[in-house]
Each structure stands twice: as structure tokens, then as C-alpha cells.
Length: 220
Image: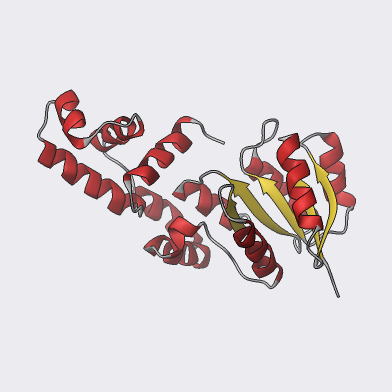
């Protein structure tokens, strides 16, 4: 059996060790190395024979996008799978354009984790689950086919100042009525803003709006 050779890049030691242990239990996986972001990690990217890099989206010492570019520069055949709590639409576009093949949310099940790795090893691309049934998946395909369209795509999902205010208040746990009182407008208007936000960001719930706000306030 040809094993899928994996390199884990994760700053959190407990998570790094846990991932290594779980993956080593699978007969078709081989964890070549598990590293945090430092000079050793950069050297291993250049020398190790690996199939897939499992990369933390929220690295502490390096920009994850820069690490992806380094990986692809050194070996364009290496597939990269990002692991993170949440990725915004613009981040997904940037990473896919740089060659990232898969995304795994850190609250995914173990089976989801394994399935994503195997799918990427088979040449598939796996987007975050909250995007796979939205138009955004089609947007990514179009963006890759026509690079100049990216700016237009991102501009099309630009939020108004009022919508940005609503997002921040949703992230604080306020209801539509409470937001309306705070912004001195009607609850019906707030409901309309929430609907527009969900449409623009291709999200499905207030929880996802809150996660989006968290990602904007704490950029990776």
C-alpha cells in the first residue's frame, strides 16, 4: 500500500501531538514530521518527501499564506490542506489561488478529517463545508479560470457601513430588537440588513455571521 505522506505544521503542541497520534493509527497515512513554525520547519519543507502538508491557518510566527507560497515554490506537487476555525471568503480565494487544495475546520469530525485528506490525495479540492453548497464554490472556479475577475468578485460582496455595524452587534450576541434600539432604527430594517449580509457573504445563520466577525477582528 502506498501511504499518504503527511507533514503537520501546527504551533499548538497539544494539538500537533494529538493530530500525529490520530493520523498514525490510519494504515494509509504516514506522518513524516510534525513541526511548529520556526527555521527547522522551513528547512523541512525543502527536504522532506511529502504528499500533503496539513497547515494551521492561524500560525503565530508566520503568515500562513506566505508559508503556502513557500511550499508551492519549493515543490509545486505538494498539496496543502489548511486547518482552522473559520476562513473568510477573501481568505479562501487567496489560498485557493496559491494552490491550497483543502480546508478542514478544527471542529470537524475525525472522519471528516480523514475524508478530506484522502480526497485531496486523490486530486480533489475540498472547500469549507459552509461554502460547498453556496454560489461561492462556483465563484472560486470562475476566479481561477479568469484571474482578473477576483477584484470584481470581492467588490460584489463589500458590506455597507451599516451592515458592518450590524455584524459587530450580532457578534456580541444582540437580538434584532436590541440592535434596532442601539442603532435607532426599526427591527424590520435590521432584519433586512441581516438578510442582505447572509446573501452577500453566502452564509446561512447568525452564528456564521458571528464567526465571520471573529475572523475579521482577529485576522490570521
